[in-house]
Image (cartoon, rainbow, N blue to C red; front, top):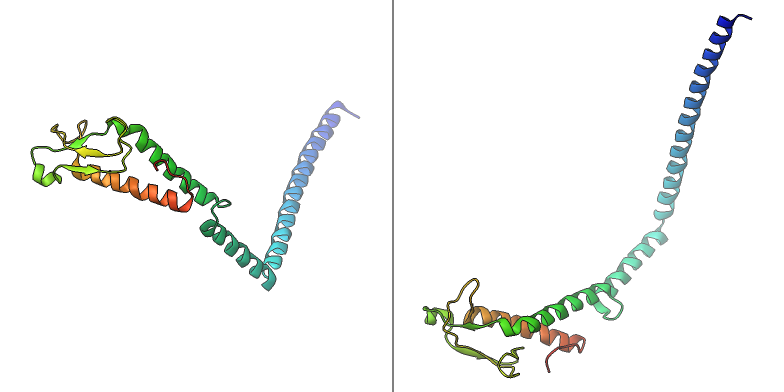
Length: 172
């Protein structure tokens, strides 16, 4: 046998090997796709029964009930409770730095008011804050009496909700 013939035969074997490998790879991919197709068909057939549909509805109903009714087992309830406790805690931490009062438009600014049950430990530990500062109201200054009233009202609502629903409040 000549060298040229042997080289040609070897080249043909390499080409055939590549083609066979390519065919084997394509067969494997097709086989995987068919297996997935059959599995999906099986899942669709299983999910299409009345008992499977009823079971799914019952699972959703139970989950919805746990989200809305449970307090110790509901992750949603716990997340909201944690967020509210955090808001109350933040309000208490920054309370000493929040001043409120009048600006030149005193009549438009709700006037001098006192607010009870506030976390205002700045004035000797009292829980009453009176908005009577004469500083300028605005950004980097004091809050207007009206804005302080909104902040205090939100604080009171959150405190009431925490005390009624979980017994976890920060003020007595």
